[in-house]
Amino acid sequence: MTTPPKIYKTEAIVLKHFAFGEADYLLTLYTPNVGRLKAVVKGARRVKSKLGGHLEPLMRTSLLVTRGQNLDTINQAEVLDGHRAVREDLDRLSQAIYMMELVDAITPEEQPNYPIYRLLLEAMRFLTEAASPLLLPYFQIRLLGHSGFMPELYRCVECGKNLAPGHHRFIPDRGGSLCDSCHPINVSVLPLSLDTLKVLRFLQKETYTDKLERLHLEQETLAELERLLEAMLRHVLDQEVKAARFLSQVAQGRTSEGAQTLTTTNTKG
Amino acid sequence: MTYDYLPSVAAPLARLIQEFHKLPGIGPKSAQRLAYYLIRMPADEAQSLAESILAVKEKVIFCGVCQNITENSPCYLCSHEGRDRSRICVVEDPLDVLSLERTGAYKGLYHVLHGVISPASGIGPENLKIRELLERLKGNSVAEVILATNPSLEGESTAMYVHRLLAPLVSRVTWLARGLPVGSDLEYADDVTLSRALEGRQEI
Image (cartoon, rainbow over all chains, first blue to last red; front, side, top):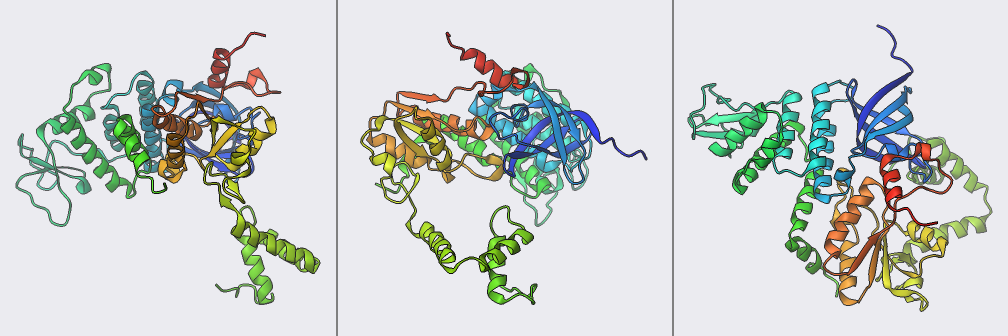
């Protein structure tokens, strides 16, 4: 085996940053060839930092990195795509932050997974164009798939028989659909309507295009989709996705009702 | 708590080392060095240090109006007669108030949020002083709210979130311009900053 080079070039999407030391940031990056990676940017929090503006979360950046004993250090950076349209819209921003946390949580450190990198780029590209209610479910199901947790949607996970249309439920802990005749004990089973099953199969199979955005879905189907995928992710990650709360807070704030609850629940006079 | 791992050290000293060790950026060696330094310090100086630590915990409170750290509520800035009461500048931290005051260019009032929304660290809007800001705006006629959070992802999320809540209450909500810092280099400027600097260009 050859020793890895001391200095290497890569491109990356910045998943998150964390204030570190006096003026540094500790970054979590997702790269096409190394997977999830941690690296330090020195002085990035200073006003005159040459690197800081190129390494904000959500940005796709070209990097020159020096291998360190514990942590790698970023020497040069140039932004390839700042995804400005996403940064400047609260709804899309909250979705992007959620996606970044999901990738951070589900991927192991320094294990290359190119399909996930491509999925991230694809999702950010669509998010730059418009916010779509199906983009997040698409991202979730594909991310599960690329991580080795693709949900089973055609057979019963207990008995292995093909599902009869209209007779199916969902069992997040076993990673897929369940027929009506199986009754496993001690696991939570969620309802799964035919519409939702069809949408799930579609998202699993088809690539994301503009056609998907025009697909009209009932509010109920979307809500069920969200519930099932969230339950599945919670099982896989064994932890809550913290950004999910912000996502729902932002969605709530879009209606004036959300703003009302925040203003009227004050305890002080 | 036990200090058994330092059996050769006098118990009060071991305790002091442990206390220093809790401070940010202080490792075991620096903690020991600080503790031994204190031993050689004159008694009145040590007394003064101890008292000032206690005083800071007892006497410093949040201003009831702007939420800044203060000794009296309302604080010096909120009760100052020369300040423009029709403007409120919203900042992340008390230190940001100092920075803005240093410019001398702003004569209005402040509101300190004490943090930013950071979904990845689990800090949501409910952990900040946003509710206090909305309450403050309902009672008073304010002409302008300036959102002066940092131009980072968290700062901008916070500004946009606060803006959504403020929009029905205030006629004019602004945020600080993004542009090139003094003494910087165009070559190293990122695309977002540079394009915003172009949009905000001015006549010479």
